[in-house]
Length: 162
Image 1 (spheres, rainbow, N blue to C red):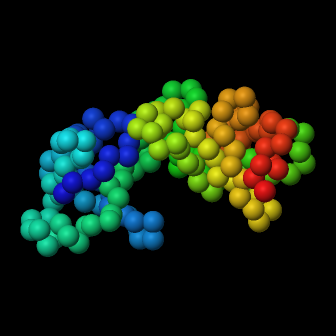
Image 2: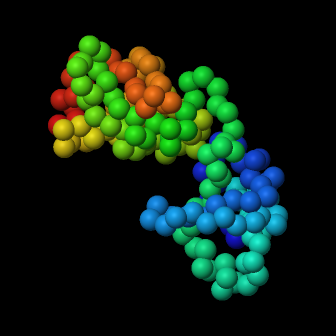
Image 3: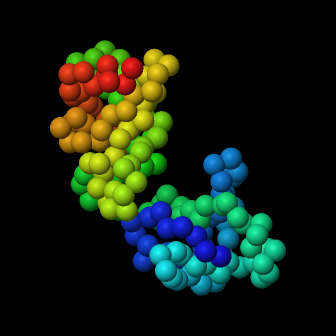
């Protein structure tokens, strides 16, 4: 099976003994990884029990996932998107959160995944969508464990999203 690589740590894929296969709508299922390698920018997997082309066809569209407990620790200023999603956005001195991070978008450039300062938080706030850059000058405090991001929004940013 060939898979698109969506991790900043592709070398890790070559040492997996097991993984999870899932879609956004399906519960993950555990599967053994018999072998894996990187070839021409893709991850190539041989999964336990997947012995024919028709077996492999049944896996089309699934994501290969790694359990959260097995993720590599990131340094300061780097975040897993899954840790940012669900965080509440708080403006300075506000009595209530502005909204909640629903997604994170990048510029689409290959190097983008390694540079969170180029990411944009997609925030649902009062029934509308806000796009907030994940820049240190704007996101002044990020507490993923507490699911809170404090922001100092530049003048006019909220109006730009209208």
